[in-house]
Image 1: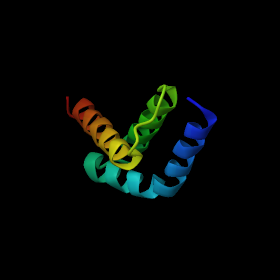
Image 2: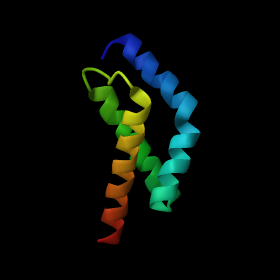
Image 3: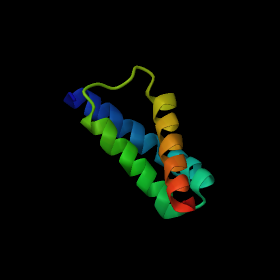
Image 4: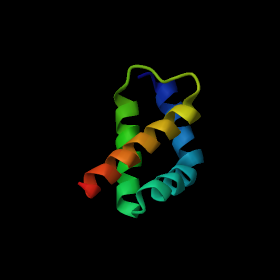
Length: 76
């Protein structure tokens, strides 16, 4: 990942972290699981070779999926 993409991802995180957190907590019902879901998504994004053109909907969808996975794991 280029430094420009890393900076874009950092700026997105800084600007959206509260919304992402609120969204993840609304799905998981648990603050720790929500934080884990968000951190996991950003770790994966940093490992990617490139970022999608429209970052916002992509990241929110990834956080949703990670939060649902966390919810499934705790329910099982």
